[in-house]
Image 1 (tube, one colour):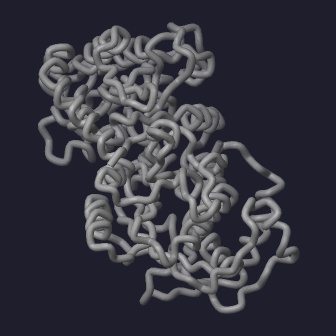
Image 2 (cartoon, one colour):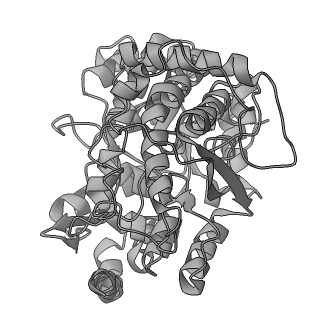
Image 3 (cartoon, helix red, strand yellow):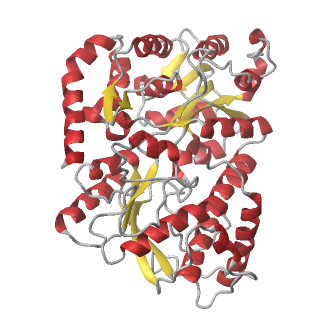
Length: 503
């Protein structure tokens, strides 16, 4: 698991990273997208020790270049494979040092090329599969985009590689939740984990304004001093959240107004997508895999009950504002501005929002919480990972000449990512830079420990991912009638998906 700290191993790798920092200095090569260390960099004092920790035998691939196609939609995505320079940002510099290490120790040079957007990455993967060319050896994009390319037979099955045994997806530095959730007949066409940080960045949580919470003594009716205490006890539920939302809304004028400069305070600002994120938090899903077949779960009694609770809460226009209904342009940014201006108690969003300039410059004290359970009896918290921004890696089937080096590189990136990048992102960036209290750190542990994926969301069978959001936008809870109208399309998409696997 990502969050298990391997202190002894980390100490060794950090020492090595320090040596590389000295060796690489601030060298830059703006003319190239590859992160190539200077010639003859210094080697660690005990050059064989880290290999004892890395499960693969040391090999030298002679300076082969592995080209990655990604997009640069987020700061981390633009640097987490192979940044071009050191810039004193922990994750960037850790990725730079990892790339230097792979070049120095294993003769593998990582080169990162940028597409305009994630859709272009997916389109290029499909195009390369059809043309038979080997322009890029690895594609990196959000899992929903990777799934789209996988459906067109673009990628190698990472779980059943016969040519070598370099990639082992059972290792803790690969994301086991994603592997288990999207694996059908033990086939895995894309993977994520410690090689990247955008999977953690894409995990859903709830931000809350500490000052509003304290001013309203929001936790007192529940026999607690803080919301953190309620969450730690396992009693953080949708009902508790909703009561707090209603208790904190402050209307100044004749009606509630939405904006960063209003005097009104909302209980929560959210988006239609949150109708899905609250369902996942309730332990529900769009689909569930049984006997290697995705089954539609929307009509199950627990699902219908949970959505009624979620729909009723999110339909409360007096206390909750939904971004798409706000009547403003660029509603998502305005939603963030409203929260950052201290005009809302709660805001569900992905963890990556802490790095948004608006949040970094916000003059408020805020914390983070897991998504709430449906009831206290629910076994654990659950947080979805947004399939649009959670990056995964896939090896195209056209990668033949550099296939062995690519597999070795991905395993090494995941292993050294665990020891270098994950620690820098999680401990130094999230815990130390973005949050000022130890309670938020504990909440992050809880959030990441309970990440959840849904194969229905990843492959979005006939746009099933929009099922809950479309109902919320309609304004009426037409749960079963909507499913009746769309069930055949969903099932046909699932059948086509299974047929593609067989083909």
